[in-house]
Amino acid sequence: MTPLVSRRGRGHTGLVTLLCGVLAAGGLTAAGVAALAPGTATASSHREAPLISGTPQYDNTDLYAFVSPDKPDTTTIVANWIPFEEPTGGPNFFTFADDAQYDLHIDNNGDAHDDLVFRYTFRTHTKNGNTFLYNTGVVKSLDDPNLNITQTYDIDLLRLRHDRVVYRTRLANDVPVAPSNVGKASMPDYAKLRAQAVRRTSGGGTTFAGQADDPFFADLRVFDLLYGGNLSEVGNDTLKGYNVNTIALQVPTALIRESAGQPVVGIWSTTQRRNAQGYYSQVSRLGNPLVNEVVNPQKDKDRFNASQPAYDAQFLNNVTHPELPKLIEQIYRIKAPSEPRNDLVDVFLKGVKGLNQPPNVRASEQLRLNTSIKPSAHPKRLGVLDGDNAGFPNGRRLGDDVVDEALQVMEGALVGQKTGLSDGVDANDQTFEKSFPYVAEPNSGSHGPLAKGTSAGTDVRSQLGDALQPAGSSAGSGDTMLIAASAASGAAGILLLGTAFAWWRRRLQRPY
Image 1: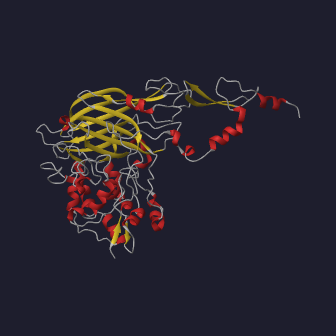
Image 2: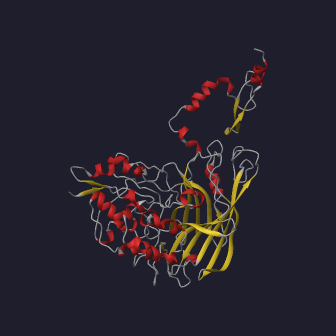
């Protein structure tokens, strides 16, 4: 029988689950198949390797690079860290690591060595160490004294030759980070705080660092015996509502191009962590949104995270003889393309010839972008596969459906085998912005589990009755337990806990 697949999907990767869009034909309609299409197993680099999964502050989750749609003479790079940030995850909310170097690498001549590095380093500041609170009142600006935990960062531009730094310049100094979105009582105008965190750099660039909605979306329930064992657990965006920490940098395209004008640049992101001796070691790496998740096997994942593109020949067999198509053939009887897979070498290691492959390219895993291709007026989610050359695998836009594209390429789309494979999830839960930094605002702590369909807060208020009073008001009785919410100019303040134990003391002193 002819296998049917849905044509929906998008987001990170995690090929083992991407594979599950196929059903036996029977009498199913296309719509019926779409409803059953499963999602992906992991994000682009969410917990993709054993070591990095235990240290989320250093874990790259996604990398995007595209010609800026509203400023086509610039290129925007967006890199994310810290997977699966629960918005209500206080009191220690989400910060970049102080002992790390967060790097954006540029190879502008195709030799597999970085020519430029944009390096972000962070510092955490605490105003009051005698409170457990992230913020001690309503936060109206990034310099508000009520914002107890803050971060700032520097950006250095490193120019390299033969892997040695030959020139270093400071692009920005002490730039404020947008805080975690604690909730509407603490941060009633979060958009204002984010806008204050967008800053200009020397050299004509723009930078942002802070929390954002995770732009990836997929159904991750694949681990429950492959979507419940009968495809009953599919079609939900299980990353809906989660945040990440984002670094976004927009620079004049002329800054990152080779001096000779060759327009294709290779881009990847890394994290270096400082050890006890004060030296930095690379612990995470991300270029294309598939490779270390489902192309590299377990034995190579940690080594890939510590490696450089110039030494990617050691991983070549993983690309030319990939595991995923064999899994799909075993489970769904879609014949795997013949090996060796030289078509995948172009997509993952060289760039597509005539599109984003630089002259004299040395095979290495990078996200390659042809900066001479203008942004599409009407972007198509399948990018190059659907005739939109401004999209993945020519760079990666936030709206590119990299799951569907990668699945179809893995199953032979470039060698004439059309499958229409998909992950069954088609849209992010929040709309991307039309200007820098483009990522959506982070999900608010006010929208955590308690706020979704439960009346627990109302029940508590009804039980406390007169004991629940605003700070400074008359409680109506002498001895009460006071849970006070301070208000200023009509904006709800932060929830404060005040208690009076006099009644208990008197009770304990009373003779039996």
